[in-house]
Amino acid sequence: MTNWNTNSVNQVELGKLIRRARERISMSQEGLAEAVERDQKAISEYESGKRKLPATDIPTFAVVLGVPVSYFFEGEFEVDELDQVLLQEFHTLPTIEDKQTALQAVRLISNTIKRHVSLENK
Image (cartoon, rainbow, N blue to C red):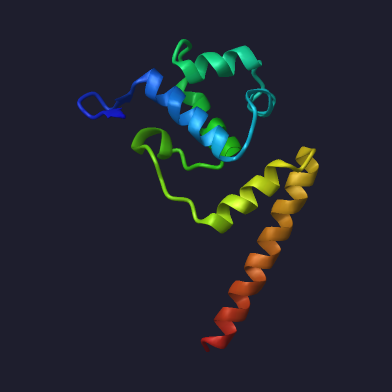
């Protein structure tokens, strides 16, 4: 997938990775377009390799698609099934405010569990 000789990513392969990540979270092209502030035609052209995705946009796509930036350079990664379910549920939330609230709740739960485990280990 990666052209290791030049450290660059082939646009067709990058498009396939975008599509694979998008489909993994059951997101439509329209949904991705809205999330990254593009139109559906641009997403289609990125996925087919007909349009070059600016390197500066890769982090935005990574966040929206729930993948690490390295995914676009290293290829496939394994996602724990529970992580996948959580991500799919997250993407069903209707507004950015709802998503921010959910993220705050997950962080609160995570921090509480970490504190609890830390106290147990003392």
